[in-house]
Image 1 (cartoon, rainbow, N blue to C red):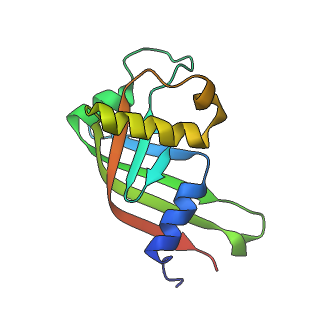
Image 2: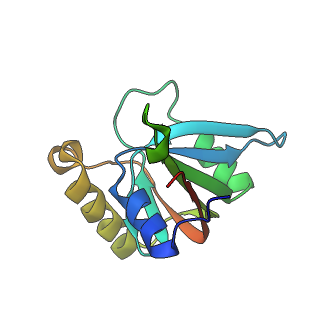
Length: 140
């Protein structure tokens, strides 16, 4: 059995990925997964609701977080050479950021990673995930 990555390496791989999948809990207890872009600051992950077209202004992920803040986010690398496979999962508690200074810092971090956010900053809520556990696996 392959041991997990060192926590610093797991965090580095997660932070360097361009997109992750966010898992929230629906009111009926079932999982809800969506892709999202993010920025990592230590043991905190930030994302914001941006202006991309959406089915509704009331995003399910925000409603789920309000009812059950426990979330997971995962990034992975797939290759046809299976010796290069890995994944990193961050488990924690999500919250809507209400402090303007923290939200501004999060938006700065996001703009530093994504060109689209430099030109058009997200106007929706900023969400912070306070990571309690980094879990990982690597084939080599």
